[in-house]
Length: 248
Ligand SMILES: Nc1nc2c(c(=O)[nH]1)N[C@H]1C(S)=C(S)[C@@H](COP(=O)(O)O)O[C@H]1N2
Ligand SMILES: [Mo]
Image: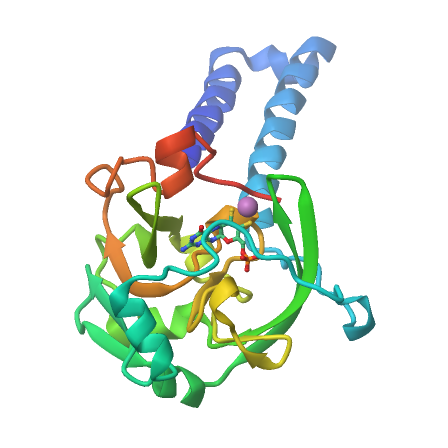
């Protein structure tokens, strides 16, 4: 949509130039052209900003206590059985629009090159916490699965239900490929505990807390979000009209 609007702007400026030779020489003409250019810059910056890094912090800036929010324990028979076995049999399926569906164990994740980042988690409910997250980047995992050209969104299916509905979230490929987007299995140097999404949760550092899906059991590549649960791309988007793109 942005690209379409941008091409429309380019066409608009070209049309002005083609339609009136004198416009570039008149003060008002130059102002009109410059306005087009500014809009162009703003859009450009909007696009490139999506790939900028979220701020990272020093170890001494970490919160003494990292709060937990939403589901603090999925507490289903299946989840409790996995927890009792230290998630040795937990598998994260990577499927949908991929050439090679995967089933990744926690051992698999731990064997992958990891990124460690100290970031600030911002919840819409009005609290923040700075913590250190470790886990493999999502991009190479999607590369390994062989994302098909039709894939445009990545959906994270979670093991918990809130108010009877499964929790889920989704991001686009800009965020999926972002260097700080990781499947975290450690928080503050320890395996992630149950309150924070054991055994694996998404960190998507350019967005608000509710996008950071905990208890991830399936990662699905899709062309459209329309047919996924309520169609708005996430649990809170469906039930409370939260923004799908929760940029910070
Ligand atoms: N599966 C799942 N993921 C979730 C939630 C949830 O209830 N279930 N809550 C979200 C919200 S609103 C926030 S602020 C963070 C809280 O993460 P924390 O419990 O590690 O602080 O997880 C997000 N991811
Ligand atoms: Mo939140």
